[in-house]
Every structure is written in structure tokens, then in C-alpha cells.
Length: 323
Image 1 (cartoon, rainbow, N blue to C red):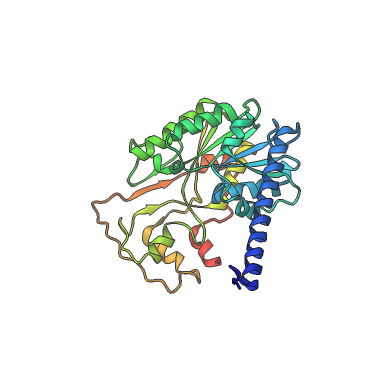
Image 2 (cartoon, rainbow, N blue to C red):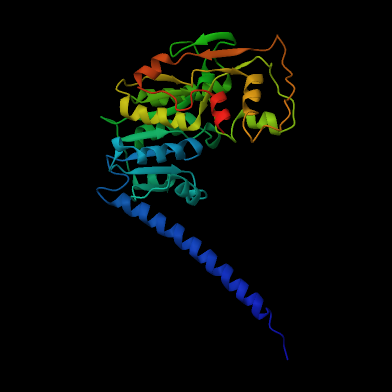
């Protein structure tokens, strides 16, 4: 008598696996249909009063969550726009929308639906685009509605010149390195359409940032120990974006955002070791010499006042002491 290909136990396991896969696929299909159906509604996520967040990494996800929690934006729909659906479940769980005001769609779906939004924040990094400036230009001209709304582009303070410890502000000259040019060209695309640019300091969370790599990789650090790094928590960067939507009445403006407490590379490692997560880590060796660049100090006091913004985490050191 022929034996069955699978035992009864194996058949049961395979059936359970298929059910789990079916449930996950059904969930994704449901949310995709909900998002697309909201596009077809006059009051949906892509209505003229909607807010679009292009790029839902750590920064974009934090921004979506903060907008939904703030009374100033009560009742407004928020749409997170990503390149693919791969992380949609993770993003949705992190944002935690309780009022069905949050939607996730892909960039291609937005373009197919030809929808526009009153407010747009472009916080996707350049690494995901062959033509970064072109992507920002497309968002500013086809997704951003214009008029009374606000277009925000998140750039980086690294575009500024100054390498000998001097202080830079919003009016300081920029450098012409390839990376800086890519960001400056993208900034120009946003500014041309009346948008605002936020030049952000080095971003971090407890487990993300230069400190994590320096203390866990086991490798020496390129750069001098006393080299200056300007810092900003991801949640505070999102808060600055949020305040730009509320307060940025000046069109085509550039803002400089940091916590106002720069540290040296050595100080960053020492501060990180105040956290239980890094307390047992060994300090790395710093390979830089006096001939290497020291860095610069950000002065974003004008931006703080103009956007009515201040950081929740006043310094990297105090954050690590609390965590």
C-alpha cells in the first residue's frame, strides 16, 4: 500500500502555515484597498487638506505619529508614502493610528492616482534615488498642492563649509563636495516651489547613530578625537518638521536644526557609555590628527525662534543619562 506523501502531523503543520500566509496577505490587501479607496473619496487621505510624508523611515514614522497625536492637526488625514509595501505593517504598528486617519501607499500608487496634498514633507534619504533632485522636484510640482500649504524638505547641515571649529548659521556659505551638491540641488528644487528646507544635524536614537557604530563595531574611528559633531534626536527632527508645517510662514526659507549642544567624537562615546546599553563597551581609538578637519558648530538660534521650536532632548549627553 502506498504511503502518503506527508504524515497527518506534517499535513496539519502545512495547513497552519498556509493559513498564516493567507491571513497576512489578506491584512495587507485590506489596508491597501482602504488606502486606495480613501484616494477616491473627497475627504480621503489625498484630499487637498491632506498631509503627505514621503519616506517613512525612522524620521518619517516619528513625524506621522506626532502629527496624529497633536490637536493642531486634529481631523486631518496623514498619508505615508513609501517605495514599496515591504515595511507597511511595521510602520503602521509604530504609528499606532486609532482614528483611521493614517494611510500607507506606495509612490507609484500616488502617481497613478494623480493626487495632491496641501502639505508635503519629503524626508526620504538620497540613497534610494538615482536622481534625488529630480525626485524632490517631482514631489514639489505634482504631489504638493501649493497655495496656503507647506512643502518641507529635510537636508543636512553637512552642506555648510567650515572645518576648523568655526560657527555656522543659516546664512553661511556651503561646500561643493559631491554629497553636498546632491543635497543642494534637491534643496533648490524645493525652494523653487516656495518650499522650506531644514538642514538637520547628525541624527540619533539610542541604537542608531555614529555612537552605536563606534562602540559596537570594534573598529578604530577615522577622524580626530576632538572633532566636533552636531547632534539631533530623530524625534526632535520630526518635531521641527511638524513646527515647519505650523509656523513656517516665510516661503523659500532655509532653517538650521540641532540641539545646540555639539560634542566631540570622544565626548559622544563617553556620553553613550552612560547608558546601560553601552556601559560595558570599550572606547575606540581615534585615528585623526591635528591635520584633519575639526568640524563646525551650528548656530540655529534664528531657526528655533522662527519655527517656535526647541528640542525635547536638550543634549545627547542628557539623553544617554536617561536611557
